[in-house]
Length: 621
Image 1 (spheres, one colour):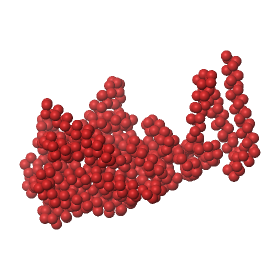
Image 2 (cartoon, one colour; image 1 turned 135 degrees about the vertical axis):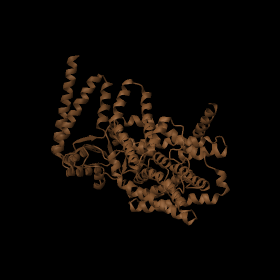
Image 3 (cartoon, one colour; image 1 turned 60 degrees about the vertical axis):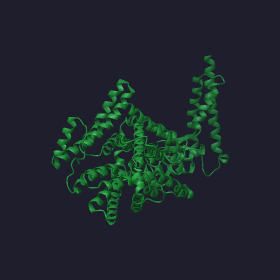
């Protein structure tokens, strides 16, 4: 017990000290965790062999992260990514694996060894890349979405890789089964033995059955259980159930030989439309962060610097060579799939490293005798070094990105919009953000567009989705789902842009309900003519509230002030509709005699209505 408490204290203190320092220096939390692991491991030897067993436990952070990402993706969004999953992701895995295999054979590796190393190094780090993209608010950019599609394809590709590696073994290795020796309960071992003994078609049916159980449970079981737990009014039960979902799915996937990360991601996608999505997300988030941090610490603590310093050039050369080779392949694929400038740079730099699943495949290959121990150790070190360099690569991206931004936002390529929702919000400044928060908090999906990249990046840092692009461009508006949306909110700062957007949207969708932000009364008139259904002057409601406060503090009761506010509101709306018919954009307001005359009459009507209220108040007193 004392040993466990000692180790826990060391790991937590290392994270608490190193990560804030790294964040303050702008290095990111991932590099801080890796540095903490190096300090307590190879540098000070405060931790020992338990690092490897902890790593298997800490990999659960990756599983939880994919579950949370799945919660953010609707099935339709995943279907829209199919071309990137099969095309971009599939080509990356195949081309990178073949290129590394060819390089390995040129350097003298036997073809089986070279093929195994190619498969291992074709993978990238899901944990580091997604964690860093999320921290920097880049996950919703075109480059970030493309990187995510490739990472998801790689996670799926781990399954056939594990199935294929035994075919490369010269002879069956004792104890080389996928599950390996374990201390699992007897019932679990019996189930594993039964699955392993099934013929190919039987194992396939069991696998498909496990996937079906995950999908059906997410669709039909989670809701009733959540309502049952809610009746108990015990908040900790929400957390227990959220953990049970993730751990249970991971167990089922592992039992049938599938990736637990893939299974939990699938469950997250199924639950993306669930009303309990936000509850699940808030319950899982703290565990995901801690376990991912622990995983990165164990990676840093597991670096064998004695082997590295004993023969550094081949290992460093392997790490740098792998990153350079992957960068070239990713750059070519990115250009083919129309990634440009910052998005292309983000995509190529983000995925150039090897990944954490490489540790699993190297260990499996060594047990199968596909890779000799010495080569396996070198590959593990190369994987670790590439992961260690990745946060530095993201810092390089930040530097280059700032230099590329000198042309201004208008020169940047618009994001690829892959989401759909019943509400499109064009403009996410001080006006649109309140509308977006209220609609999303009420459980409805929105598609947010804005032409200011700084605003979009700030929004992403607070966990809100948004896409960079000019909402007045027809192609961007249609990509956001103009033909399927029920409501369009035109909330941009520019009155001209709002009017242009309303005119185009009304021409395309006569049935669409359009809510528009107006700068002043003349802008209201233009928006009426453009076809807006509801028009909100950006300062009108706040001015009404301020006027009500004035009345409350000069003698009126709250009820009386509220009644005066209501009278003014309804009168003003009626007046605006009437004056809109008299307003002529070609005639200055001061020279529009009919407009001025009717405006004076309406003002007298308002004064009469408020005076009548005052008379009634005095009579009642």
